[in-house]
Length: 165
Image 1: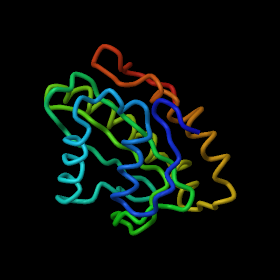
Image 2: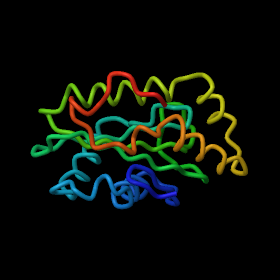
Image 3: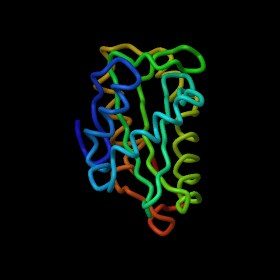
């Protein structure tokens, strides 16, 4: 299931899962200083959890030197113990790399992720998550809902205002 922006996450703890997404999703391979990016993500996590609930987390870090926004999505069958706001395990772990100069693009990408992740049909599937339904969920997520992630990394010019999930 690995692609430019997608990977399967086998780690069940937050830190290891975030590292697995950054190290496995090919989209992050061109980040000049991935170690600095990882530190930025964990620094942000120490401030407050990015587990927004309903099986979704959106970890992110900002570092200087990026002129694009990078997004990876790790999908977890067993679920990740994440310390989410609602206490539920995370099955969709988004990781975003950006810089202060890409703030507008970052906000557009984040807005699209949240818009889709907060849809009632997506939430109900994640709330009633069954491991045996994982292959179907992966197919729907990677081929329909978030297929646009495969076109990343994004700039203001390359991120369309309307993305068809």
